[in-house]
Image (cartoon, rainbow, N blue to C red; front, side):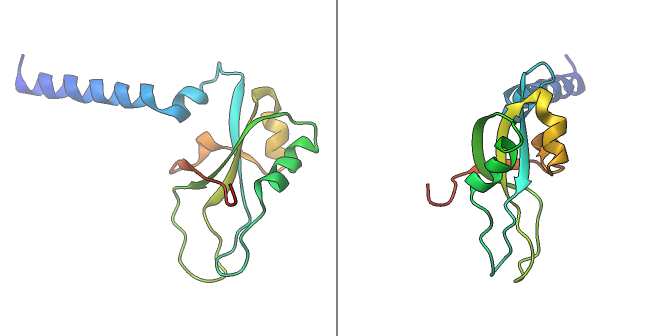
Length: 126
């Protein structure tokens, strides 16, 4: 096996390995009955800590959308560190895939659409 073929094989193997182990890739597969949606907490630097997760969840449940799980997190998009600017803090909810359009009408977005991804974190006061 030539050196270039070996490099190519290793690169392809690593790529498939990373994709296969990605929680978001597996979770948001189109055949999964659930999808994760996110919404900003509304936090403003130096001024407001944002809504707690119960408030964001109530937006969904108030419209009859079932929430299977809830998480706090942040997008991997950078925000300027300046008082009055927004933050990357989000609330993420696992909902039935067939309720995605209704959640989007409420301002939620599928977390798989976050350009730079997102990370789960501990909710404040947990």
